[in-house]
Amino acid sequence: MTEEISEEVKKEIFRLIAIPGVEISDIPEQVNKLFNTELDSEKVMEILSDEYLKHNLDFGRRLCCRF
Image 1 (cartoon, one colour):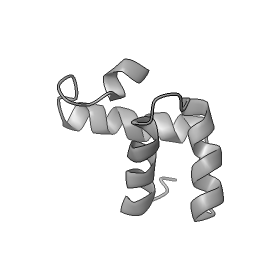
Image 2: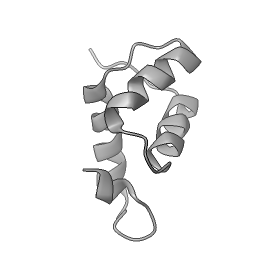
Image 3: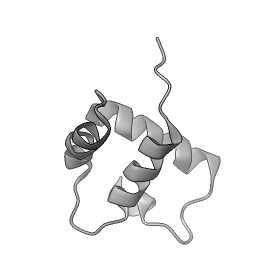
């Protein structure tokens, strides 16, 4: 039962994760308000881990520091 997440939602998640002081647990609440979705913290972590595995994010991004 995989739910397809739009690119706009993913871009918003990546934008929020790059902002210092924003916690991963706060991201689903903010994205759900903006896009009227039903994301939870686990789904956000899935999206972030998939992105981490697709690209070597140790260079140039802060995602690796948030795990």
